[in-house]
Image: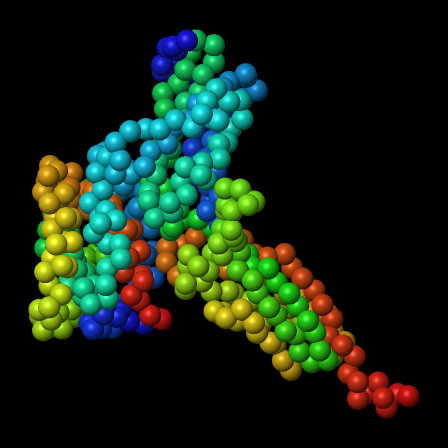
Length: 154
Length: 221
């Protein structure tokens, strides 16, 4: 079982566990997102991503989730009693980011286009109130996991 | 005629029932109003867009379901839907679904199952279920085209020994060998896709008998 994001390979992550963790809290988390007119992970961010760009993009997105979304959402996870699922997701995202770190640094050619996609996401995030943006990003993890599933091989 | 909102309790259990991308919104009547002549109006919303949209065929209806398959046919989008009840000049507040993501939530129906038997084996050919389509003239899309990682859980049950084997396959043909001759076997198949947990719908149980063992049949003559 491994991810193969273009040239970047990540082993040792069981995607089914991430699905189960998110699905257990999906309704609670998404119910807190009242700004339904905004989608952060829009089609322009994740659709038709060439394999060669996928490593950069997933690294940028997951690093943002680890350093910003999970860091800011932890107290809410405690408040809503969803810390177990939260920890499974956060720890596994951290593992993926660490394993991607080395391989994605070697690739310079595709960085610019992948960066542009990430900035679409990041700009939409910045336009929202901080807490609302973090809640929305956490609630859109089904979109992110769905995209990651395409690069997962059993 | 505008109604006074909030005097009526809301419909309950508003949820999407989705099989092969046929997406039906259904709900229960408001508490305490079972059997009363209540009518309902439905709206839906595409996540990331701006406005709630009407479904004209589901305005002032008395049934407690509404087919939103056409409106939610882009299965990579997410949606909300809501329904309110009306009775005379009173109406309820809106009752809303959670965020509905057809790509992740639709139930994958069972495949078509074709069986052929031999003396000691049963060959099984599976055909992936078809996606819902707006009209019969539309060309069919297999759910396999949407879910390239579609798999099948095939179970075969020996009615004489009461033993069952199961096998998870991705291809569409498989053969169960080393079976007992002249024995009734029953086959059940379920489709599934890796990802979030989904409800599954097994195929109808099909039973066939393996043929007589020709060698013993000849000796008897």
